[in-house]
Amino acid sequence: MILRSNLNTFKWGQAHVSFEQKKLLAARQIFYDIKSINPILSSDRMGVKLKGESMEEFGVNLVTIDKKNENFNTLRFIQASFEDLEKRDVVYYFVKENNLYREITDKNGKGSGKVILENVVSLVFDEDSNDHKQIHVKFMVGDPKNNLKPEPVDFVIRLETDLVHVKTIN
Picture 1: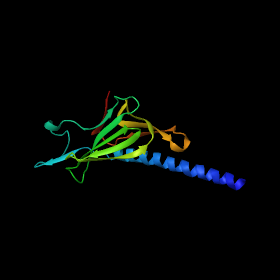
Picture 2 (picture 1 turned 90 degrees about the vertical axis):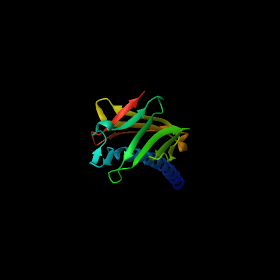
Picture 3 (picture 1 turned 45 degrees about the horizontal axis):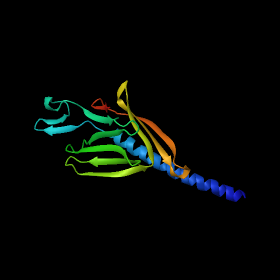
């Protein structure tokens, strides 16, 4: 009797750890992508410049939150590189058919997307009204082993430079 009870507990724990791992991997991917946002650099005959230094390129690298759908926000931003000044990948997070997608499009328009998490009940990105360099990420994921009971994931990411800002579209 005790052995059977321990095996059932072990089986439940193993299934739950697998679900937790999927949630944490999705959160890690979002965190890593947002933390790796850099200012956009360009080069010309005068040398390397940050976007916004010349009059024709006024502005900073924007992280755009689209809140048109209350429960399923989207997040779009450009990832630039200090090593490859021509790199301009647009990263887009969105929910479609209860799956969280991460889509990347390069500067030539070639894109690829993949599901990074299934059974997403809600996805909300918020900017901090007091700090334009902070993004609050919240999502609810249904646990397939527990009748899709939603479990929350909630964390805050701080952008590390003044040359990247968060903008919300309602």
